[in-house]
Length: 102
Image (cartoon, rainbow, N blue to C red; front, side, top):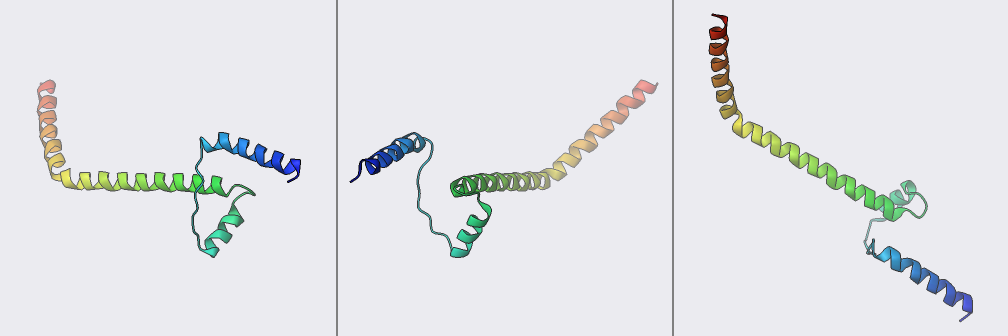
């Protein structure tokens, strides 16, 4: 084995040690069409970065959609109670306003 091959392998291994602390290498299987699309939109050498950003954005969007759904369900579930509360406060506000005008 030539000395430079050993050097290149050693440099690569040392470079990967620092990176391994922050990243994990995984193997995934994608349809060829998806891989072509990935290669078309990712900057050269940035497949992992694009996948990372895309997954984070997807999870964020799903989280927002779930929050909206839960809020809507809560609004619908408590709408009658909230209407009764608003009507009760409105009548009290009217009484207080009338008393202040006297």
